[in-house]
Length: 160
Image 1 (cartoon, helix red, strand yellow):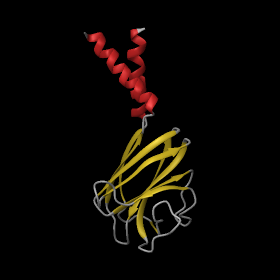
Image 2 (cartoon, rainbow, N blue to C red):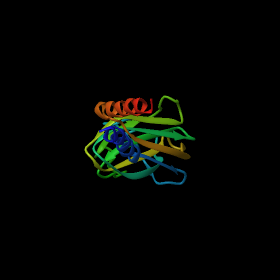
Image 3 (cartoon, rainbow, N blue to C red):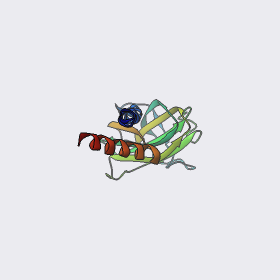
Image 4 (cartoon, one colour):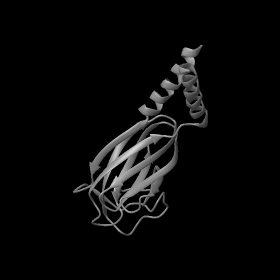
C-alpha cells in the first residue's frame, strides 16, 4: 500500500514534466506577416513583422506559455494549422508584454483538446526581431496537485 502512494506522485510528476516543452529560435530574417492584435478580431497596422512558427503536440489540458525575447515580441497560439495570410483562422490566444515587460510575452490558461498546435513568436512592430526562448507548461489540475501533495506527506511520514 505504501509503495503505491509513493509511486503514484512520481508518475504524475513524470507526466507533467513530459508536457513541459522548451525551445529557442530567432525571427531574424524570417518570414513576415501582419500579426493579429491579441486573439483578434483585428489585425495590427504595425507590420509586417518577422515571425517564427513552432508546431507542437499537446495532450488535452490547460497550458501556460512563456516567451523571453531580446526584442519587443508578441506571442500567438493556433490550433491545427497556421496560415500567415489568414491570421484569424484557428487563432486561440495572443499576448504582447508579459509580467517582465517588453521582451516577455505570456499566454495563461490556454485550454486545448489535444493534438497539433502552433506557437507563433513575432515582433510587436516592423523592425522588431531577434532571439527568443519559449516554454510551454501543462498546468496541473487541482486533483493531480492534491495527489502530489499527499504523496509528499506519505513520503515524509515513511522517513520518520
